[in-house]
Amino acid sequence: MSARILVVDDEEAIRNALTEILAYENYTVVSVPNGEDAIRKLASEEIDLMLLDIRMPEMDGVEVMKKAAEISPDTQIVMLTGHGSMDTAIEALRHDVHDYLIKPPRRQDVLSSVASGLAHRDEIKRKRMILGQIEDSVVQLKDAEGITSLPKPKRQVVPLPERVSLDLARREIWRGSARERLTPTEGKLLEIFVTNWGRVMSHSNLVFLVQGYDVPEWEAPEVLRPLISRLRRKLSSFPQGEKWISSVRGIGYVFDAEVPE
Image 1 (cartoon, rainbow, N blue to C red):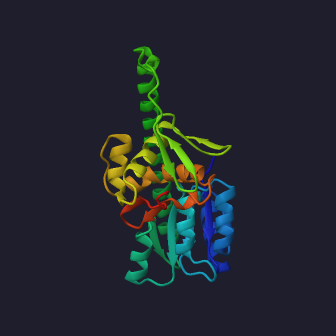
Image 2 (cartoon, rainbow, N blue to C red):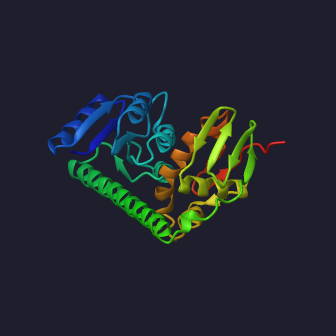
Image 3 (cartoon, helix red, strand yellow):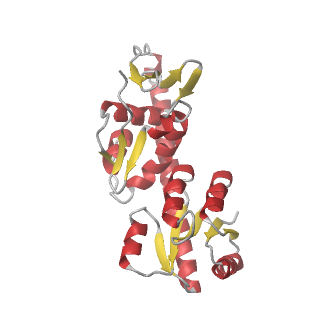
């Protein structure tokens, strides 16, 4: 299947030009004129890469980027702007965009940036698949050695806000009849957060503590983003849960939920 690309720009001429360039190269292209429509597309469809204008009325490109990081963390973003200032470039790069193009961009620049962004996305997915295979192999090895037949550890229940409870040993969160089961990786990440309540944790430190290996500082946010997104979705099943994990721009994340009484 061809990559799905979303073009977001309030200028119809730019949208049409980019759509024509990309469609000619057999990409599947969807275009929308504003940030609100872009968010709806990201929430309802799998988008591999988004060409996003940074200056738009109502919801601008920076706000779209922030929301996209939560609802579609794997989508690569190439920013478009008619304002070629250094401040604008820095603003875009601080939000982990893949690339930055001045409008109107040249055809070859568009194709080169898109190809590079898609390759980067594929590399992230490949590494994630390898990590998943490693985790599965470790589980199988433990099963073969009889490790999983050991008695289950005692319950370690941590109180969370809004009368929510977290069982670290069973990797479960509940409040009344509402209950969410966490994967081993999600459980490990949440355990790190609650044991470092209120402390800002860097991207690279979190990857090391959760996965057990070092990654370059630029790569750590890409590794973490989908995991954080999944964990936030599960926490959102509880009152105010979607607000418990906050992003600290350019640094990492912090579990800054109100401490339960």
